[in-house]
Amino acid sequence: MLRLYCAPWSTNVERVALALAHKGLGVERVWIDYADRSPVIAVSGQPLVPVLEHDGHVVSDSLRILRYLEQRWPQPPLFPADPAQAARVTVFLEWFDGVWEGPPNAIADDGPNPVASQRLRVWLDVFEDLLDAGDFLFGSFGAADCAAYPFLKYAAGRPKDDDELFHRVLEQELRGDGAHPRLEAWIERVGALPRA
View (tube, rainbow, N blue to C red):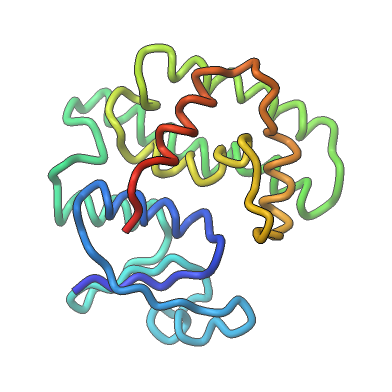
């Protein structure tokens, strides 16, 4: 049995939910309250979601969970079979979490930042270029789409009941201006996919 520890509006939980649905896997969700993280701390020793529990294995961190799912259930794949292409996806994932997330986090933590805002706008062009050759970031739907979509979707707006500061920053900084039609179509396409 797969058990996924979740919190409302979590972008990282949505990454895993997309991957689970892609692989056709069901999951029991355990919802935590941000004010009481004791259930997730008890199972994983740390306070962040998502955490996946499976047959005695506990995996935290959304990207590590994607890798775990790929190892345990390789079909349908989240990573390309070609080693060079798989390496490109791995570099993208590291860049997205280690570099791309920096500017919106800085704005959420410290307030308006013209340099961070400019970096995010320039990077919208990068995503537009990545979608030049197909419907998904690296050809077929996979880990890169799972990782990026829950953040980039805010370019299309934010649900009224989602009042998370980080999500407000993403909406403000990424809001579409019609200059990225492939990205806008990708957001709509991935948004229509199922979640576990």
